[in-house]
Image (cartoon, rainbow, N blue to C red):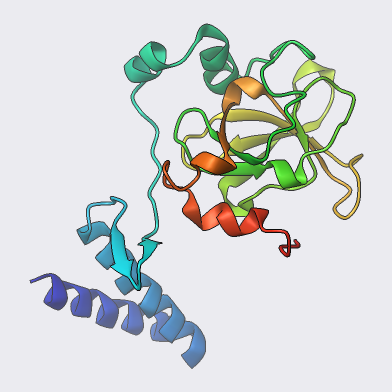
Length: 211
């Protein structure tokens, strides 16, 4: 049944795309994305692992936001205030502002990977600062006009957590400074990446890796 349903969706997307005036290449791309979405939905949105040549292959992980009741029981007061109420923690008195250990930073709410120690730098602000995200697609930007000025807020894609702000006074090569609240993050050290399901980022910490 799943196969027939996928084929039907494929043909529907194909017909709609042609009628909308897309090129042949665009039409095929849209149709392929449609059938991929259907297949992913049928998998139940869970993470699947397959053994292949003694290596672990991870399917696309779907991150989600727990209910508000779950968040209130899971998060500390400052973590909830920052991520859900757009609060700001105190500088120099937070967990990761001076962390020097190698690893990645994930959303405290959903676990989606956000930043890496490889792109972290000492900004002197008292908050964890990064010159680019680990997974750019997991970072959303929003205009913030609070406090009498216009800033660019950054939020996580799947949990919609408030993370902090991004400024254009960072170091090379991007010139950006992602000023992030420690309370919005959970640090996963390199030694625990595989055990916690983030093995795909191990290559990021190999000596020959450059970004």
